[in-house]
Length: 80
Image 1 (cartoon, rainbow, N blue to C red):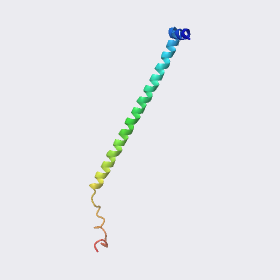
Image 2: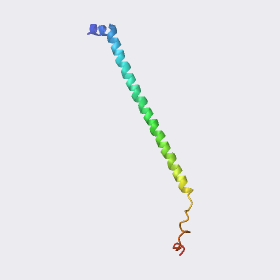
Image 3: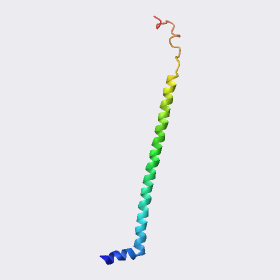
């Protein structure tokens, strides 16, 4: 068993294949993490834009003025 492990550790081809596997796995994990972070940032930006639009809609509604609907009623039904 020790001879087999020693052969694997002294064989440059086996070491290169192992290093390539470790590098590929590391690159895959890094890509997954950076992709998840980018998606989280995009979601936060979308939520912030939505919140800003919501605040603007509330502000617009608070600043709204009457359209003159009651004054333009020819029968003055609301002035009983």
